[in-house]
Length: 271
Image 1: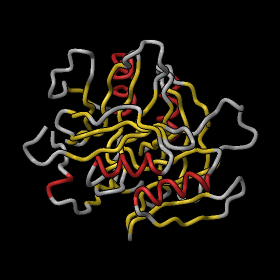
Image 2: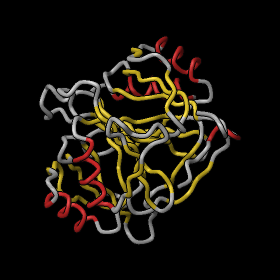
Image 3: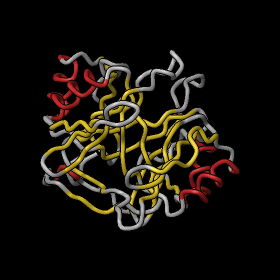
Image 4: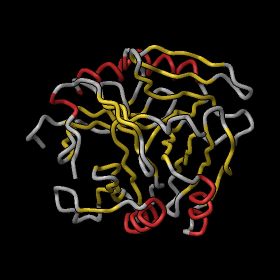
């Protein structure tokens, strides 16, 4: 299974998303203006805001490459709902996959709804981690795998029950699991689809931690990116550490409270 090496060239690669691949990421936040300012400055990205019935929707882009969306948390949401990232996974049949997710033990948080370019739903998997499912309308694209500085290039599920998560996503999406380069003695697995790695699953360091998907944003120089993020108000949750076969990683909490990772991908032959 091929693992993309982004840092060999640090040039953009765009490939169409297929069933079972993450196709979009958006930040839900109570301070959309603050979040937009933080990420656009950190990533040197351009923000475009689109008026929507339930609040403006902002998209960040670098040149022609769209990176992510930012949307406000509904004013009617419970007060304990804090800023968080939601990744969307492309599927071939949204109705079937959403129903199948429920059969496999997931909770459907938002039923299938029609949007401007396709239909989507939101689920909590059996371990409690939230993700969205998306199917584009005929003639529209499910999205693009954008690989380059500023793009979300990896997703990792951190959970107290990695075995259950592996079982669920394998049954739901046809993901195939394999041991990571370090052997996966702690239950960690790399998940593959269409001959390439699409996500990772690993145990939490504390059994009481809630399950969550971590979003990894590609940067050219991790120390510089981390320093800039902290200057902009983020909190460093870890030191820089090596992630086998992936690269150098640091976990941060943005000024609005959403956790994310910056990733400086490994050069070919490293990590």
